[in-house]
Picture 1 (cartoon, rainbow, N blue to C red):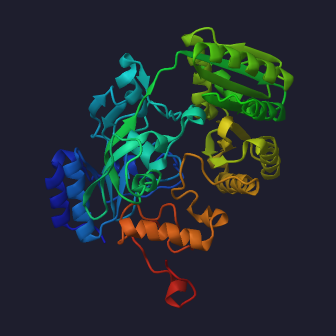
Picture 2: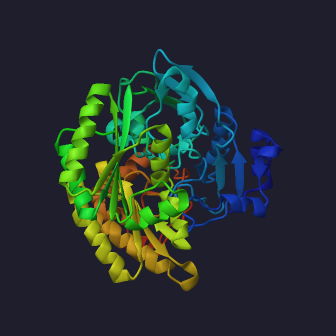
Picture 3: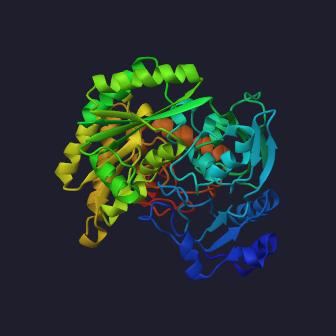
Length: 484
């Protein structure tokens, strides 16, 4: 049901009239996240400015059974911040203060609206950095990173968001404020923080986040290796890791994404390459030098026809610009594209990439591949033209690619989350008992199902529902389906 005037007035009193958005034209800004194929119009957008304001908003929602969706910068690619019809969006964009920088403890405390890159900037002068670095790090927020357990190019060596969050202040779906963890790396008790990170806003809203920061390495080298085939590049990835070398990052791009990046940013990638590897090594100077020589040798043994090292920070930044800007660069190759996100074992990379090529030809749509090769996290981009009615074909192909990842022993997502995009694929990876356990955990935090409903787990497990408060399915009414 639409929100009553009384509830609207309470929400306005909680944040102030200037921080309540209700005009249809303005609401359209919030009707989707980075997955633009899914859209829904919220009743209201409330721009919270503090933990106390978030708590008051959630208390009102809990009392009135109003579904809510927390939102940061809206850069997510799985529909995790898709609004709920007849619900509200709680925007955390105003909450962008850095609350504490504790260099002796190697910790920084931030609000959820702080951007990923701004964390590193805040501690750079002291010789530290924040390791997880999604490609959207200039605009994506730490709150969203926590919700999705975001990764990035340099997570091969340093780990994902969950490895760098030591404490959280969380507003639970009933409005209670709790503290999880703190500055200690391994707090006592059950790992509730581990359950919360990556829960995609279904267990509550993080309003203060304590992060672990790392010392900048003594030395860094960035190598570019060009290969005549994707198979050869995939073999090089496995050979590097098998040799006992642990790079900070190993990234791969195929020919289509190389062409797009070269047109957009002119990073001077080698001509004629079917695949590129970007290998970044960091650590003690002597060890980095030895590993750089080993990586050069391994790549050449696997067929690389060119291997070069960035000579300075400017060249390194340009090489990475081509990789981190690959998604927007694909707009030069197609009017529309669908970004998928799956994981496969490193040793299966060549096999799965060949299968993606076969699926591309079968469905008549091009696929560009750019991904975190070191941990097998694929990001195939399905190119299509919505004006030509190719949208559904692109979705079918993207789902088939996920199936190929699962067939190879991989998973549905590496860092983009499940959201609404992959919720109906969850039974392909998890058993009914697994999904039941997930649902029970979710209900322990949110018994009324008002926190980001319709995401991650189909409710009930019958796809095609409109995201929103729980509605009994017709098959449930006649006893042929059961809600967990």
